[in-house]
Amino acid sequence: MKIAVASDHAGFEGPEPHYKPEIIKYLQKRGVEVLDCGAFGPEAVDYPDYAQKACDAILRGEADMGVLICGTGIGVSIAANRNKGIRAATCVTPDMAVMSRTHNNANIICLGRRILRLDECLKLIDIFLDTPFSEGERHVRRIQKMD
Ligand code: RB5
Image (cartoon, rainbow, N blue to C red; front, top):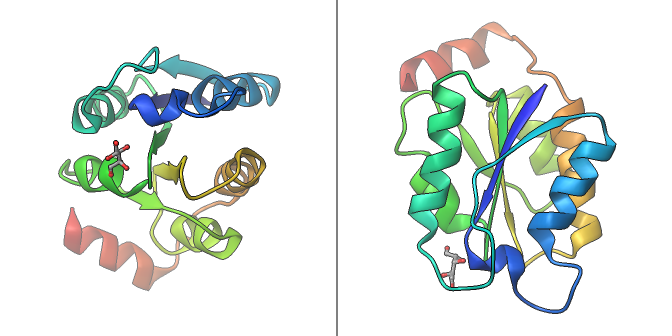
């Protein structure tokens, strides 16, 4: 399993530990290979640029799934969902993380630095990665309608 991780400057804001490097460390500790798509520091950047880098990696088959971080998780999800074949879900609760996988077969989880504590982000990532798509006929049909 390889995960593309990207954030804008929100991944580095606030007191340390900063979210993006902590999330990468956590994924690596889980035994997951990480493709770091930036950004790499707290200088202000544009979230669509970094969301797109992670999406491109997934669409090229260089990563299986993605984790995107911005202030709210909303901007990166809007940007990512412009890509056919990307299903990016902003998740705030454990139920959202479960359903984004079982119903939507989401391939990117989007997290808000200004919305969630770091430990909440890590828990949502665990749920997201550990929950398989249901493969239910109605869910497959609905996804096919989008793709
Ligand atoms: C950056 O200040 C902020 O707008 C961005 O991280 C994100 O929250 C946008 O949706």
